[in-house]
Length: 332
Image (cartoon, rainbow, N blue to C red; front, side, top):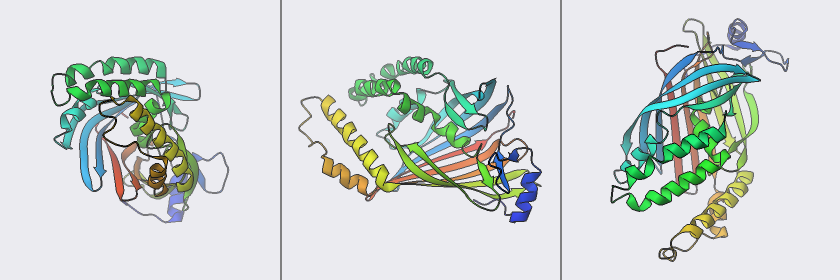
C-alpha cells in the first residue's frame, strides 16, 4: 500500500518543514517525532472495518462508526473519549451469527474514556473502576437477548460468567477496549530517522490477554506528498517466539484447567483435559506478526487511514485479524 515515494533528501526537507514533525529529544541527526496537534473539543470520525479469518475461512466481518473526541488537557497528556456505534455484522457463520450480534450490542454506543500521552499515543483507560461498573450494566443486556432463543439459552449463563470474569481483570479489559484506539494512534509519538527504519523493542499482551510477550518492531516513513498533504508510515512487528511460547503456553494451560474445573460433571468426561505436553507442542510453533500501513494528514497528524493485520499461527492453524479505519467527514 504505497501511495507515493520520495528520496531521503526530499523526505528530510519535507519533514523539516512540517509542524507535526518535531526534532526528537534524542538529538540524533535527521531524527524527528510525529506529534498530533491536539486541542480540547477536537472530534474525528472513522469507519471501522473488522475481519477475522481462521484457517483461510472468514469467521466474521463487521463495520461500525467510531468517534475519538479530545476532552481536556491533563497532567502528562490528554483525556479522550472513544465510542463505537451503528455496528453491523456483514458476514458470519449462520450458527454463531445471532450470538455475535448480541455480543456486538454490549459496547455499542458506550463512551470509553482513555488517556493519551503528549505524543498522542494511548496510555490506558482513564478510570477502570467506572468502566467496570458501566460494563456490568451493559452485561445486563445479555441474558434478555439470549435466553428467549432455544439455541443460545444453554450458553447464556456461562457467557455471562465469562464476561463478568473479564470485567474483573483490568489487564484483559484494557486490552479488549483499547485495541482499536491503540491501532489508530499507533504511529504517534515515535522518533523517525529519515531514510532509515526505526527499530522498537517492546512488549505486547498475548492473544490470551493476561501476560506480556517481547516483540521487535520497525516503523519507517515511506514517503511524503506535499501536494496531497499526506505522509505514509509502515509498521512491521514479530515476536520473540521462544520466550512467547513459554509465557503463552503456561497461560493456555491455566486457562484450560480453569475451564475444566467449571464444566458440569455430566460433560466433564466427554473430552480428556489438554495435557502440558500438548500445550508445549502447540506453542513450539507459535508465530505472531503485525503489519500496519498509516496514511497521516501532514497538517494535523491525524490518521487519514490505517490498516493493521495481525497473523497468529500454531502448527497448521492460523488466525488473521484485520482492522481498517478510514476517516469520515467531520471536525479535526
